[in-house]
Image 1: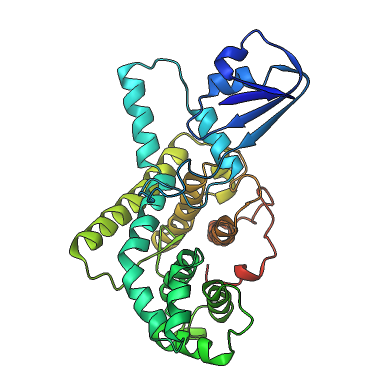
Image 2: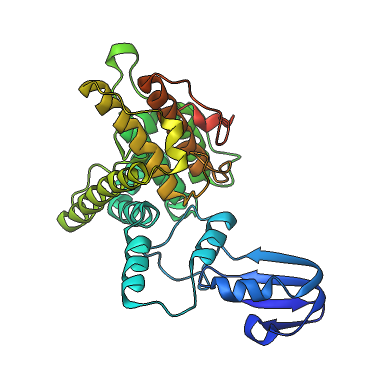
Length: 340
């Protein structure tokens, strides 16, 4: 973490005892809350924080711990949770378990593994979609191929036949004026699959882990499949643990869920919905008393927030109480008309 003032910059450690009129602080994900406090209290009149989201080495390969949906807010939350003070052995174990066992971590691992495991499948699909060889390779090599792959996984989780869909979307309109074919395809798939396949009684529920994360299908590699299955089980177990812990401690946000019904079937429906809210809070590190915390920032979080909002509404309806207005209001976004 560095602190700058006009023409010079110093580290937060060297900044102790120094005061300036205006302080500008560069915050990295690895910063501790102690150094952050020092850096953000140096300016007499104002203190500004600039949060780093990109990795230091642009050429480094992504690893399962990367969070592609990191925002300035989530990085700052992590910094505030990262103490540089020495912890006892027990505190260290608990902190490590919370970090590596959270849905935020497990979901990032799942999505990174899924992207690697499905890469060849999506590449083959793009090559056989009706694009020219040059167009197909351009799309696969594009930075937008990752988001396109994630969109294809989401569409498949909503029971769309992507093998039939993608060629139709390619044939619907040309790409003569397209700067990035992968980005254009991503937009077309997103619009075409805004609603889940089927309608009425034929509509199947989306295949989501903990009600949020689209499952990855069509994985041939046995090790990749095992790694994904393991993380899916851990995410589901974590959602249960977060909800049970919150209910046991009567954490304020659980009041918005209403009381769990006595009827067995209604209680199961209530719990399934409540788990989604708990999973959302854990994935996005929500610590507010409001069930869904602050308004979402990224597109991915907006989608998950809509799912969690729907689950919260269902939980309160099953509990026989009216859904509260705490937390962010539903976000109007063209990608939010998806299966919740």
